[in-house]
Amino acid sequence: MQDCKLISTSLPVNFKLSSSMSPSSEAERMKMSRVPYASVVGSLMFAMNCTRLDIAHAVGIVSRYMANPGREHWNVVKRVLRYLKGTENVALCYGGLDFIVKGYVDSDYAGDIDKSKSTTGYVFALTSGAVSWVLKLQSVVATSTTEAEYVATTQASKEAVWLKMILKELGH
Image 1 (cartoon, rainbow, N blue to C red):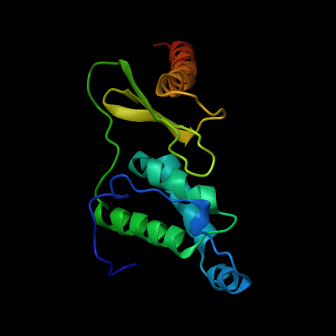
Image 2: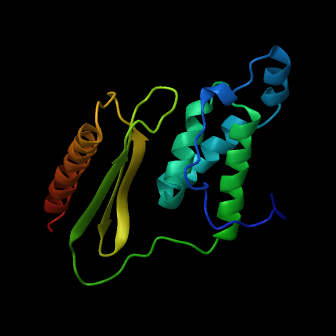
């Protein structure tokens, strides 16, 4: 991927992956077993958890297919690598005088094609730098967009309470 074509987004708009894109024959599975899918996705997870929250959505999607990845799944992983290559200079920056935690939360409704589950995403920033972020499938199947938003808001609220307690413990 050293000389790959650089791109500006980790995923195209309205892009969906599903388990139907996974190999169905033994020959296809053998071919994909030679691809370092799990290793690369694990490395992307490490980068996402430590410094690159901008790839959280893409990594959350490709990690769902670790057990039986297909060619399309692998192409998306390579796309994320191309995005990272093109954004090598992107970094989290912390600074500023206002010691205020700001949180943002959102969800999609039934965004997972295979299980009809919604995805929760939230990020909390402190002095303009992200300190906590999550993107994951919800544990329940929401029956409406409103319910998906409530579930997401509940999860983000728990994180906000925890952040408030840890900051209080640290003297802020």
